[in-house]
Length: 257
Image (cartoon, rainbow, N blue to C red; front, top):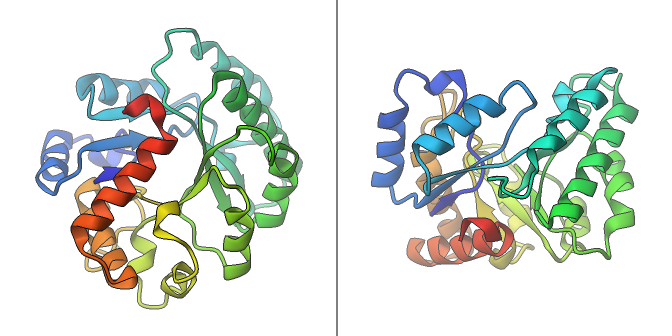
């Protein structure tokens, strides 16, 4: 299994990262992909990826909840790290989040557009965060529909209609995490209309721990609980879920093959 979205560089793991990595390996996790938050987290992320080279892989991006009136200069500054020898396997985590605050809606859209340009320029996939912002996010990505843009709709929890919109972007996949195991989640019903060939596994550690760990700190080893739930939904063997979602992840994140 590949955990396509895990923030193991977060302070929540500082005290026991080797043990967390060990449990992930024991659970059958073959690779962990790490989305960045903003310019303040790149050092910590690269530190973990260097320590676990070949197992942990970094992305670069500026998270929408970090966007404010003065973010653009910080975002432009980050681009310097995309040199010819850069280690990043994707542009992420980027997107739009209007759940808490709509103050910087236009700035979030501008930040997303800039980072889409990076993805196209460097032929990297895009890892999209979208919370309470589907129409506003699609307003930004619609002009790129027929380009080579590819990526993941991370932590997809949308409606059937929203899933249909994503399916129209043939190079984009759905990132499925612990939310699919929650008792009141409508995601299992939506997934009945989405081919498994368009899904990848993720945890979003330390957030969104699956049942039976809900409410606790999430970690990459818990991805197995997500895979077990998908096996139930798709009426398939766990091994097949593992193989298909791993293949899907490597179709997107070509630099991590």
